[in-house]
Image (cartoon, rainbow, N blue to C red; front, side, top):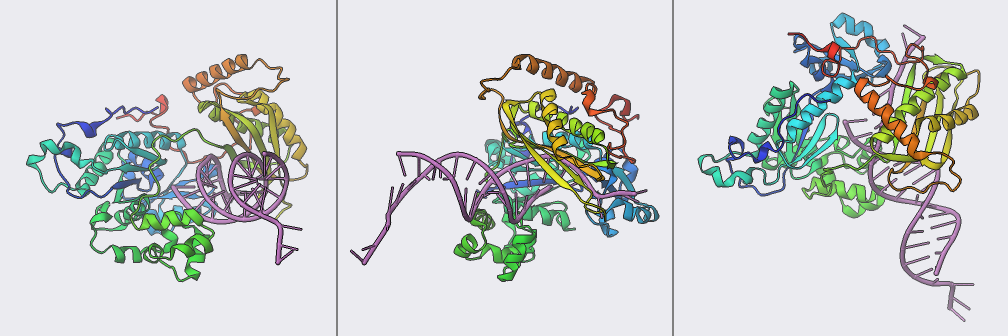
Length: 459
DNA sequence: TCTGGGGTCCTAGGACCC
DNA sequence: TCTGGGGTCCTAGGACCC
């Protein structure tokens, strides 16, 4: 997909001036590189006139706000604000809004990651817009040639990372550096918010660490959600400094956080407990769920939607070369509505682990019929594949009548055609057609500038 | 009319084994 | 006086992340 194929391993390039320096500090160093307002920034890359303007990106179905440019944040627009409620305000305030365009964001993400990979041999792609880089010793690799330059620090290196990503992809990022991932998160937060730091901050070199940690609310520490934050505050632990200095025994016992809490506290103390995950294995569960563009009352429509989601989930399953042993199917009404509510799910255990779309659809339809109740306005159906096993080793059922090899070949062909011709080019009739009214609404989509020839930007 | 989607890990408790 | 000890696997639920 990606159109940038930057040469890997630039960090090794001895001709580059990047590595001609020595930082005497030998402490471990990990950087968190985080894209600023990622989805909003992606939209801006191809519409530079939006620079400096308030931009927001909407969730699926144009439901709520999921990304905001700084200008939009300054206007008080909140994450999760329902679009239909604030649309009038957005219009009045001249905020530009976009339906989410995941093929664009996914592709831009890959480009950013490709650039980052050149700055460290150890990169963990943590999410669509974030990556951890191990920078320990990165500057020392070029030591032999380092006579010319002294005082080149990881802060300089971080600035170089930031500038390169910006130049090669158009995406602004912030870089936080520290001894551990948890501290790097904090450093990144500061880098992003401070006017003076210009987007790069090395917490290891900060003389006033205690004061910095004290200014971080305990709920803003990575790994502390609303529940834990509340419990910690009840014990008088209100900020990151206090959490760092908390009593270990109490953390382990009282908090029901056990090892999670302990790791977190140690990380705050500068002891790395969360190693970089350089090559994440296959997913342990795969889900596909989507709210409908319009409420659904007919079983036939629910069937089509469910079949469509099964087929998407099965595609992901095959994409990582796994088979599924257990699948669940959910249906639910709209909890925001003051109308009769219904929620139900069914668990399906396949006699033989499978990744065969038609087989999975057959089972899902049976399950769906069992949980469907007429008379409700359904809002959403979901398919979750749990209990996945590697495609290579599985225990076939003794009475399995299917020609597994044949169906695997068929699936492979279907996937290949869709990869080449575009997602959904070939799909199952059970999944209905594109125009059905339960399909997702996306009324404000930008073009897929980087993944569709028709949408290529003209210059 | 209209409120997102997709993951991970850990713990406790029960069943079961020798 | 007094009824063992140690282990695994599974499931449900809770918490977190982006």
